[in-house]
Image (cartoon, rainbow, N blue to C red; front, top):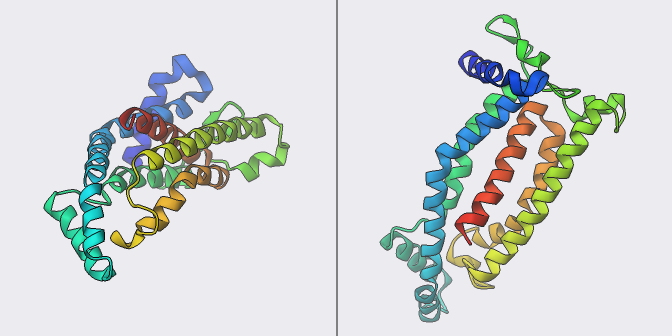
Length: 236
């Protein structure tokens, strides 16, 4: 973790002339962008996989007619088809899963009072009036529209706009390229539930931003915004 802290400090030093006291916050945004660039090839692969799954729908429909009276055999046949065509129904989850370690590194880095037996100097960094190690509940101590509170109001506004855009994009994508026809969720276990919940996932970011340290919240907001823009480009 100390190596990661050093990386954040180095990035903050580089950005200091441009962002002043908010350089560490800018460093976290830049770090998030670098992580997303590294994961981008997997996101492109996931997009190709989604298009491949869409292309399989006529064959899946034929299997559904063939095994209409045997749900277990239908499920097995569909999974075999995905294996035969080298298409994974869960490939789209991989880019998100690979970002989890970076998020938890930031979370622990800005939740720890000490690093390597010394005081954690990163906790002194701020985004405008809000400390990067603080949370929304701490900001409310000075009032909803105090200096720190306004930082969170701005973050919540960004997340809300991104969530609405993501919701509309997800609904449009599901309507144009349904992974599963209505009533056939048994083809891929759990896929029906995932399809119903997916359009609302971005709204859960509001809760995350409210409860994690501000540094981790910046990572989540930046990554979520990137994800939505990336999906809009890859699935257009």
